[in-house]
Image 1 (cartoon, helix red, strand yellow):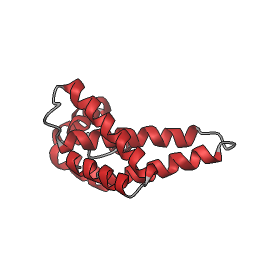
Image 2 (cartoon, rainbow, N blue to C red):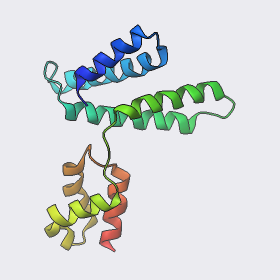
Image 3 (cartoon, rainbow, N blue to C red):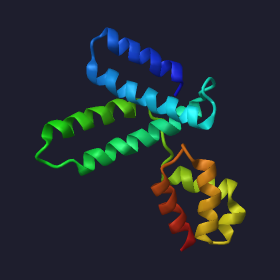
Image 4 (cartoon, rainbow, N blue to C red):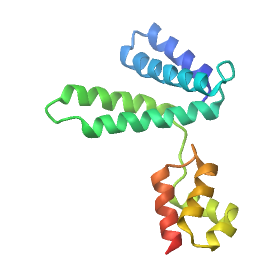
Length: 145
């Protein structure tokens, strides 16, 4: 996801008086800027950095939805709306079959050892931002059996 696209969409949401969308995109932009400053790339925000932060924010909102008490239906619906908006900007993640194919193709030597720790170390760095960590872990565990 390009940072400029997020900024343009936020301006469009502001012009349309769509407060929920503006707030969700605004929080994404703030999180991306914070990470960019922390990593020292304030003026050169890459799409990879944006994707990584968007996935992290999605995970955070998902946890908020899961932990929200049933008695707070209004708050839960707000979290769900935010999750829906953020998910529009999230990159498409690899599924289990794609992860397995990538491991067999790019990490055949490490996969042959059946050492889960070594496989996870090699694979997580390469697939970070392209696949969900828990899905990767599940695929690696199956391959180590």
